[in-house]
Image 1 (cartoon, rainbow, N blue to C red):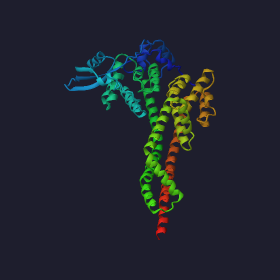
Image 2 (cartoon, helix red, strand yellow; image 1 turned 90 degrees about the horizontal axis):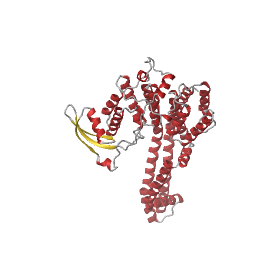
Image 3 (cartoon, rainbow, N blue to C red; image 1 turned 60 degrees about the horizontal axis):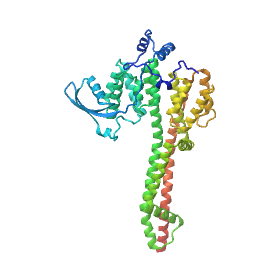
Image 4 (tube, one colour; image 1 turned 135 degrees about the horizontal axis):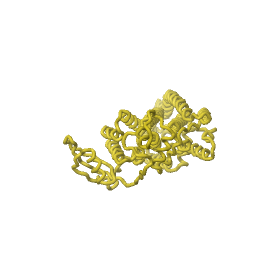
Length: 468
């Protein structure tokens, strides 16, 4: 295994890291620790050890934030109203005064005080938004703009008020001397744990822009994978909804029209027609109960999926065994796992810490079980590959490359190859699936509608013969 630097990411939350509120770079860290500036971008193991030994106190507080509404006068005389999340009114006043604003008024938001509005955004940032955020931030820092000023620029550019408040909150924390990773961690579930941990690592090595670029590329790949899955499922979903709408209209409106006509003639109806009429009568009379049952079942499944690991495992197990669809889901999970693993290894994170991070961020219970087994094997001194051997959710090709990476010390590189290979495989499967789904769904819809029309038309011929 090629772990050039041993950094325990999990312990960073308890072991405080050096604080740099502005731009992060290698020379700043070396000078801060009493060393000489370095010209290259690769930190030495000795530098990192010094950084770990020179940690300063940075206690975290869990004080509840409040949302304040403020009105200020800008230097150009323009009056601006907005919101800011802080622990108290004094913090808001201090932040605004330091920004050069003339205070007009500050008051706590009434909706926030009674709990109707959260003081900070709690929505998890999407992969697309993370990619854009990290890419912009890296560009500004590379241009020589300090970190805090870069975040200030991003806050002014943000179109959403929630995002604007989020960035301003980060700027405020940076101005207080809090490290960038802790600033993001304080925002709750908005930023992924993996990003926070990778930034903690960058604060040890001084390579912030490198980590930002790598994480931006990582979340871009994640967004691409998500879009592929959505594109693959959108077309069949639309066809199914359309088919259900057509069948519902025919059964609840068209069939009853013919039913009254058949009853008036008193002719004998074929079994297929009687069956369709029975279904139509049942749906027409009990449509509200049917709708409520469907909603109840969907709600129970959704709640059970979110609250019970066993139910979640069972549903994921079933979906990963559906013909054709199983390969898309399996490859998507594999690409996510290997690309994340490769990113962690690339930044010299311990194998054990990498597995722990992967276990926390994955939402697939099958892979979570495999990763937990890998952690157990590592604690016993065994290799990580043993847990993946022969598992149905981890292809043999990927396993062999994992073993090769362990033996050659190029685990990160091998995982990147696996991710690239199965990304292409997933793309090919989605393309083939799109070409197959259209004719299959059209034939299925034609058969269902044809059966109903046949049931309606056949009795008409019998009536016509009777009249003749």
